[in-house]
Length: 114
Length: 112
Image (cartoon, each protein chain N blue to C red):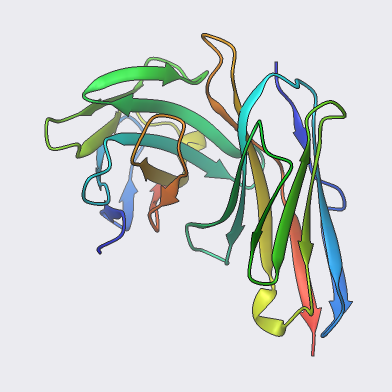
């Protein structure tokens, strides 16, 4: 059974700093991994999708990496802004037949201090 | 391009009742999936549909069911509601199976 962990559960950093969010998964048989952000009471917004054959993806100030062999992904946010404050979730899709469902991590609540 | 639309946004039911939630995917998207989000359990996968066929199912009791129509719109139904069914129910669509997911704002269900 796939388990996805995100540590820390909460993180506060001053505006302008670069930061890294972590996502660990127990089963390396994955099809892809997706990072989302969720604002309070809202749905999820897709940030980046990494296919299992890729090592990283970039979008603006965001960079996500994937290391399947070690079961880890990181989301790098450059030059953080107060608008980046949200809960960040990673989700892993399995690649084995009968286990292609999406498993979410518990999230990291990020607060950017102005 | 319109995003994923979920209705109703908020609803209150009592124990034992049933509820139907609706999801309209982004135009052209053929895959729809449903998730339950609670403070205690986080985000949990319910089921996934593609071209009107259920492709994957999570570990929820049979009271939870869903379907997808020929226009890709989807509904999920929860029968015999329990207090523990109170949650934010999220729908996501994707152009292909296992593709990038785009979420709606969710339907917040409160069971009294």
